[in-house]
Image (cartoon, rainbow, N blue to C red; front, side, top):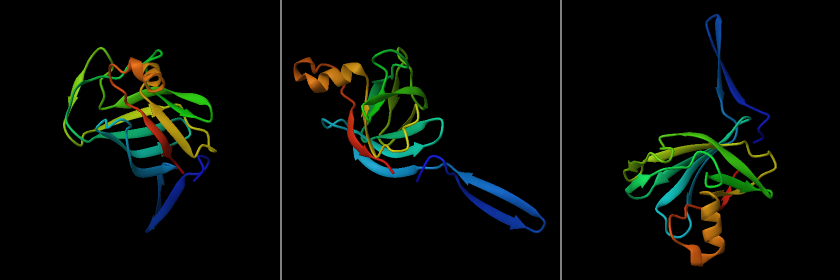
Length: 151
């Protein structure tokens, strides 16, 4: 699907027409995080103004936060570019923290991926990227998802 099109269904009832629209480019999947981190991307939605990632916990997680800006905020890496974090739902912006039960879902939105993108990597921030390059600096979390397919 391309971002330029929105699927629409027109329902005609008596003399009234109602238009329902669904977001373009919603892909359900199950893509586990790297390094045995108990997380999985379960849905990717591509829209004209954002790309939304739904991450489901695969175990209970304690004291989780996401940096909302700066070099350690999460981003999507595709076609040699970083698509920055915009906002999210059911998350805590650092320094606030929150706990998650098994199978809770975090929603993160990023700058929109370009139409030609067929895979991306989710990087938890520059510190996570540096840890994946240099295992010697492997302290802390490493919440990366590599080569996530999208339509």
